[in-house]
Length: 156
Image 1 (cartoon, rainbow, N blue to C red):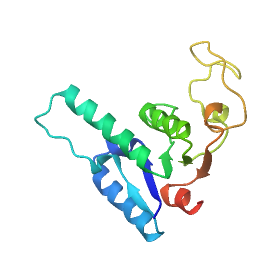
Image 2: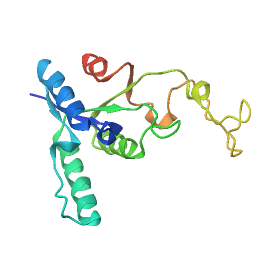
Image 3: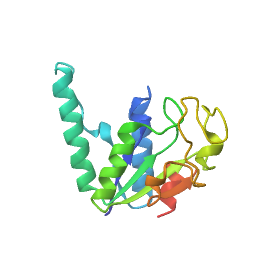
Image 4: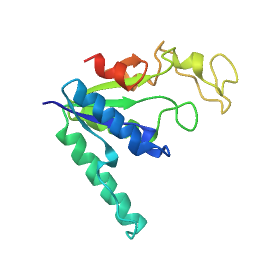
């Protein structure tokens, strides 16, 4: 049975454990084993440094053990996807894992950007990437699916 690492900012939602259980059940329904970051519990007595190192190490182990990564690439705290998720995607690609991203809105990045000062510059004077792609061009080797987790899974 192939294993799917479920990446994304859903781990920060109040109902994150329920979301993980639902995604894992969807995986099981379609013949996969879902691996969710919150499968590894931290001890509330740990220091922040110990907890941080534990979470990092365990998530890296899950990525190594999976065959596929399905990641929530929707905007998180701004116009961009979660930086931790971006790291996990890049790490998985470096390991030659199949990576599927799902997004509610797959229009070109330039069309969705909320901090535009002009057609070519953002409000900080930086050039706006314009490659008719929904994310930074470095995600170009990932499959991008419009919709949610189930739609991404069904694209396999």
